[in-house]
Amino acid sequence: MKKSLSVFMMALVLLGLAACSGSATVTYQPSWHYNCYPVYDSWGYYMYDDCYYEYYNQDGTLAQELDMSEKLADREATVLAKTAEVYAEKFALSNDQATKIAKNVKDFEALKDRSAEDVADFAQKLYGVNPSEIVSAVASAQVGNNEELQSVISQAAQNFNTSEETMKAIVNELHGKALEANGIEL
Image 1 (spheres, rainbow, N blue to C red):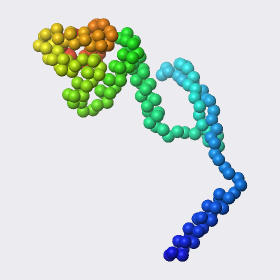
Image 2: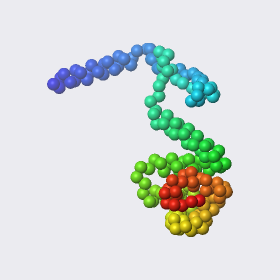
Image 3: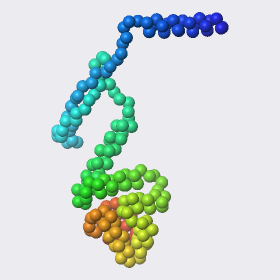
Image 4: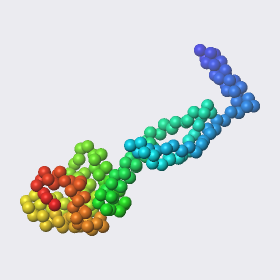
């Protein structure tokens, strides 16, 4: 057994030396080209050309990257940008404020089991208002006292650099069903 193992190892070493001692060294360098592809909207209308570098294999086929996380991240970034664009247009917000809403809504929707702490964190990040103030204001509004809720909306509007009417529209857009279910009217 020892003898056959040592013969096998010696054969591997000799094969390795013989393979490396050749004068022709082959190094593979993929060729790359700058390609442009037309992009169409969902109705089939031309929008723009999407141009980028692509690598080709030796046989001329397009090299495929297996980086699915990059593709997913690009897709999510596009969805986030489009969502922010919709909020910016709908509520006449700056791109930064609209992106803030889009990010927070996306993060909140990603949570399957939402705890009270998750909801409080969402409210704090989005509106910049202490969650206990929001809870107190909503509780007061449920019994018909909207003054505290109006104060919280006013504070959130100041944090957002927008008007109170716009902030009410944002709150109705994001929480309208919950407000209606609890008998709260803005």
